[in-house]
Image 1 (spheres, rainbow, N blue to C red):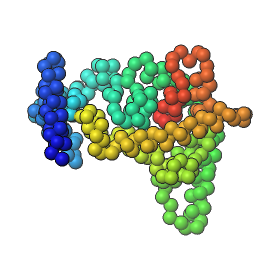
Image 2 (spheres, rainbow, N blue to C red):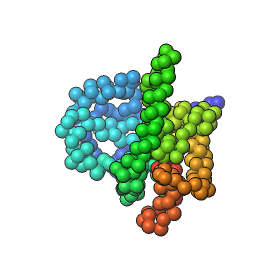
Image 3 (cartoon, one colour):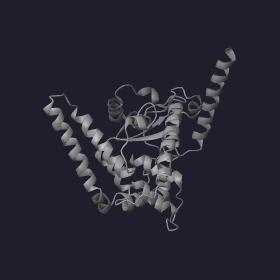
Length: 295
């Protein structure tokens, strides 16, 4: 048992020395900030209310502040003028997205538009979604479907009122919105029994939660291998479940000979994938990455 602790301490010491060595060659012209701990950086400064802590630190160090979350450098801006510099004046400098465990496991290794780094691929995918999937003409084509689904929602509320049943309006509206999204994207609605034993809604909710939960492996790389939070294991499981689900939907669309009055998003993306005029790499992985964004 003792050798495990010796190995762990040795690893931490080596990482700290490596961190210091790398810092020697980096530009020191950085904004002011609080003193960082070895390895952890400034992670230890945050508790249940990080926004309050950042406010107090900004009062001391200024509206543009340098921090480090583990090995990840972070610039914190906390004034309108500083925000304008980052989001408007120098927006392209800060437009990219860092690599993360979530982007690897849940974003098809940054092929998902939400996680893709700023560059030619992101611009091409954004243009594709804007012109082919979310154009005013395409949204208008789904208007009869949306009207029909809203009619079903209103009728269900009327029936509940006649029976004097208690209704969770938020849940009903969310369910109707989810059904409309599925009809536009996949061409059909799904019940909870259609995706894993957890249920369709639970799987989607868990993907959304894990995509943005803080992961130690993103800030301290060797922690990602240890997976102390168990997040990577959960993300891999969800990724496999949803990938199989998307594969089955794509296969159904490829094998179907049914004539459709309005093509759903899977139909459109598969047509684009098979086109020789797409102009950039776009295969089934990219189709699934786009579908995962729109689900």
